[in-house]
Every structure is written in structure tokens, then in C-alpha cells.
Length: 159
Image 1 (spheres, helix red, strand yellow):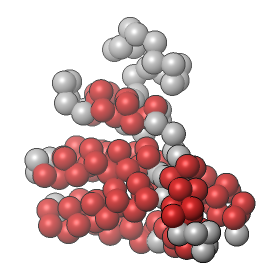
Image 2 (cartoon, one colour):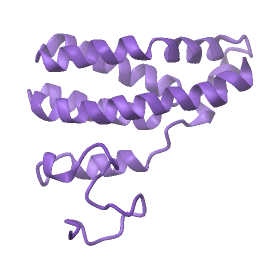
Image 3 (cartoon, one colour):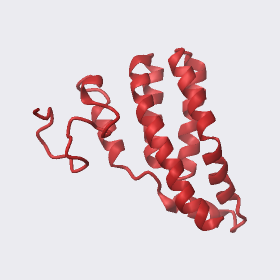
Image 4 (cartoon, one colour):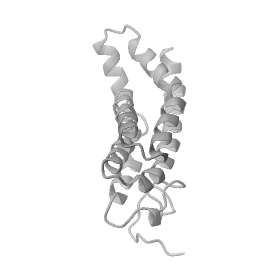
């Protein structure tokens, strides 16, 4: 099978998926979100400096660690709410949920998930819920990975 992208991506031997195992190129129209998805896939799951800086700003009060723990605990609820809104094509609820996800992810240093939420927000604003549903697969996968990394690094190290 030939890869649709002859340039090496460096991310995976399978160059036909911007997020390996999640979002195949055929589901993303040419010239739309594919380059942004590829860029998002290259971002780290967690930028640890974000929570470290928040902890410093809060004078080591432990609030940053509690915020990360609460973020992880609320992941399933956030994902469920966002998925239901996208599936039902409820633009207002979907925007509320995706903006909440984007901001809270950025606050815990979840840079890849924040970027995916930003891309999903754009699709919702365009009314492209079909592509939004496709992107939800990546949000779910990288969201779970983000929570896992937060739990195994920042939350355990500082808890």
C-alpha cells in the first residue's frame, strides 16, 4: 500500500494517519484540518512547566496539584458531555463543552489535547459535526493518554 504522503513524518511508519491508529487521512478532506492534525500529533501530551509555573504563582499551596487531580477525575464526564453534544449536533452545548476542555487542558499543560479541542471548536463553529465526530476519536484517545500521563507523573510526584 502506498502512502498518500511521500514525505517522512517521523511520527510513525504509517504515514497515512495524522494521529496513528485514530484518524486516517481519507476521513479528513484534503486541504482542511490534516496539516493541523499532523501538527497536533507532534505536540507533547503534557508540558510539565505549565503546572510547575502555576504552582509557583500560587506559592506552592498545592492548588495546582489539586487542579490536576480534579481535571483527571472529571475527564470521563467531560468526554461524555462533549461526545453527546457533538453526536446530537447541539452547537451551543458542544461549544460550551469544547471550550471548557480547551481551557482546562491548557491550564494543566495538556497542550496536544488543547490543540485538538481548538480544532474541534473550529469544526463545530463551521457546523461540520461529521468531521467533529471523527475528531472525537482523537480527543478521546489523547484525552485518556493525557490523564494517564498526569496521574503517573505530576499527580503522583506531587501528591
